[in-house]
Image (cartoon, rainbow, N blue to C red; front, side):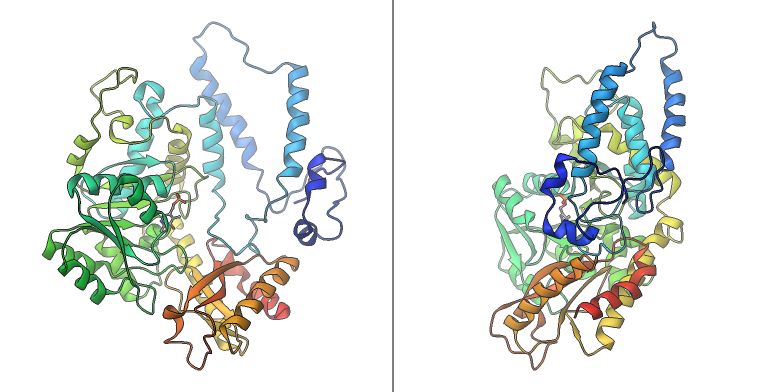
Length: 486
Ligand SMILES: *Cc1c(COP(=O)(O)O)cnc(C)c1O
């Protein structure tokens, strides 16, 4: 990431950690003016943005002449601010690089970035067709393609600001259709389910997980039999472990007791296209055709910039629940406006344009190039887990079910393990390898980690989301760095 440095004010704010991973004192030698040879950051697509903008401009040919360009003086002021912004943005972990293998952060595909920017010259609002006709049409098409990926013949759905909003809408609909009934999700489901239920005034309870981090079916059955349950949330890939709840059995129980099932597939949903899943994981994804609602995050595994979640309902008649007649919104036609079926009002049409373009380039098909990207993430996780469990230094928390690997240095006690985990996390960062840390409960590990002394009820483990396909080519390097740090 060699960019101009000079005496930018942002530089003073550089942390020790930043200095550590950029090497030396954080000063990179400024390249000669006009030369720029980026390695980590993709820039060739910028020329395509220029070309596409010229194409877009023709749409305004019939209008009276209006000069939208910046003046030279304003351009210079904008430039000065941007050159202040760029060095400040260095105060981040290097997310696009394969040696960043920590949290669930995936760089958007260049086409998503460029299509998003292109759309911003129009800045459509997908609340209503009057705010963005083309981008609303693209949203409907893109969302229909996601529904088709899950084998849904019918659907009602739209994009949201993210997975939390998508889950909020699904739980809101669940509460409307099962008033007063309890929502269940596993004890390691996303923390927002409990909070969203609170916001909605719905009662919420946790169901324990088994040793693989999947919702425990006996506990679920017992809780359902005690009565009062309306909806079960099945997590298709937990954020911490990537574990997938046993959806076929959950659906069977739900049918027997006439419950709703919502699938939180925010992180894991796209793995329905991947190869190399275990048989029961594959069966869980196949069962998604039978859930009532589903949340998926194109801004996680779908190669989109942040601000792109999606909620789907299998029964389109739930649309009636959203009916409102505010005098100041502007639905001017009988055709469906997305604001008529969503809780959010204004939303970036650009997010829909970016998603549509990405799916046009990389269709959501098994065996396609997009699916191959997910398969490579899965392969990377299996390869790293294999190396970690083969040597004497590490202990896997559990076999990865999707592309998240959780492991710990081999120590005798929980407290010693947690301490070493933190030290390795820090030392690896100094070597340019960026991991994450997760605290796991004793109940999840006790069965597998025999001979381990639980002097504390939780243990800090290292956690890596191998969420970039390129990780498949970097596993050796990642593992070698880990070994050298340990
Ligand atoms: C990330 C995530 C969420 C929350 O989605 P945001 O897009 O961060 O709002 C919900 N559920 C699961 C399983 C997730 O992984």
